Image: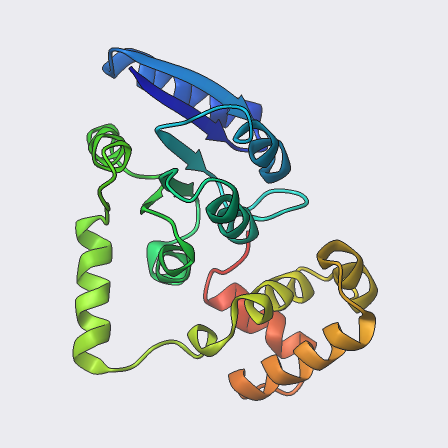
Length: 209
């Protein structure tokens, strides 16, 4: 029996994933969570063979959820299932502890293959991501945003969505001064001049919806 939990803030996505699993797999049990916080509460009392996790959710995002999950239940495998392109998010999330990364546009067969591997404790990367990783190794070049720390990356995306430093500070549990310091570092690392240029950069690189 494979014990699966699907974590996505959109009920229609959860139902679609459940139906896809029901149509193609046997011997499974499925649970649901609509947020990272709900998942973290559930893993305290339940054991899952695989967590299927979205990364863009209100409140705690996928990156922080993975990091906290690693502390609570370090052996629970996480398959990230996201609308964001693999070349923009996968490496950062795999480094954070995810076992695999899939774009929501993937074929059903690839989704099922990823579930099978990750639920067995193995890693899964798509052929497309594998090619990206090889190209990065060969060229030695990474996008500028890959030089950001995880926290800087989160702050960047939130500012690019139009959130004020005060809102970012409240949502991340930081001081406004700390967020302002992050903003300065981010602009320096990305070689940008202001938040407007930052928003254009983030949109161009498909880092936010």
